Length: 108
Image (cartoon, rainbow, N blue to C red; front, side, top):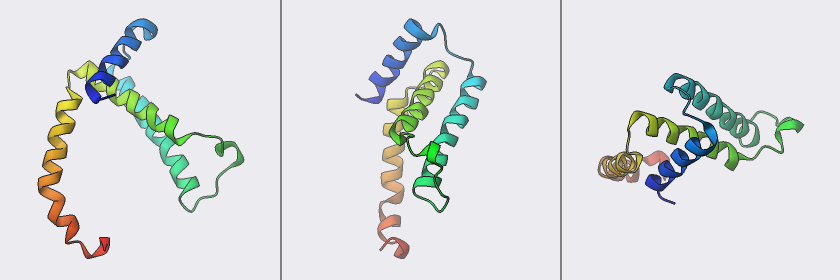
């Protein structure tokens, strides 16, 4: 599914199941919460912190999908065409960073 269709799918879900979008500030707080859950898994599973028994069953993919869902909500409710914005950002990063990363001694 491309980003445009993901935005449409989220909008349909909100209309059919969610009653309405939470306001932008609530969704921003929710996004922060979801990113924190991703950070907790990464820090404990791949970082130096020990993983608690209760965290071992947490699904990183599910938590990343939660982040994506809220980002798509924010894009929808603020009128952002995320597909267009992402494509533009990828083009900018490609032009700006290609040589920079290839010439970075730390990455060799």
